[in-house]
Image (cartoon, rainbow, N blue to C red; front, side, top):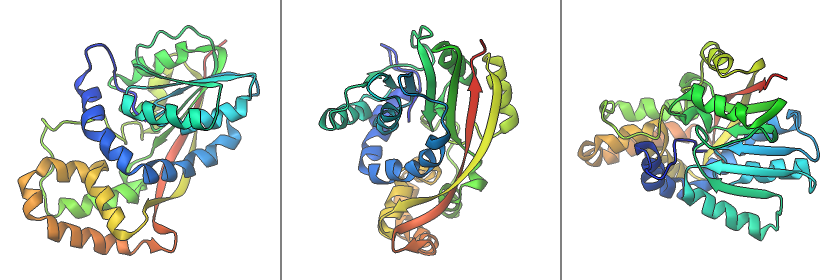
Length: 290
């Protein structure tokens, strides 16, 4: 979930995850974990992972994908989950303990510089690598985690135009508020930083990977149990949330009309299963050469 640098002297990105985003992610965990599961559920059956493998989950967040991988590798295998946000890991560790999952370990760390030693058969990341401060360095270090011939698979968002669950709310909010300035606090490059197949292919090549493959994954995503829940989620997180947060007093003054406009758009997607919108990601697979 979060892979920004985590060191003894936390970077601005890590501070932002822990101070600003973590409380909001925790509040909307039912959307972020439940919704994202649609993408990993479509990817997991095709993952090149075997019973007994050792795996690492980069940007593991609450550890739900680490646990799913642990089921795949079985008691003879193991999973290391790494994330820079201790608030996510605390919850994940409690869930893992409650579920009596014994082959998963979650650690706080920097996936760009963590001292991997080539011990893993498989490396996975679901919507975490997009936030690398230095994508090539992060991807190269993930490759260093792998044995020769090991497989890395990551899921990243395609463009905002391919993801109306984020694009439509941003367009709506931006009708009332200015775009954030260059000095806006962020969590890193952002959710769409790896949307370009050509650019990411080049990053992976520079990082030393081979056998690079892209597969488009389209899936519905529940963005709120109710329209009100969906409005609050969009104004708290994502591109619309960034516009709203950075607008400050202007957003406060125009809150009622922003919520009314956003509600009108989100109501179009209200279903018996909640507010459901379309989303699109890349499954990107690459190999550490032999």
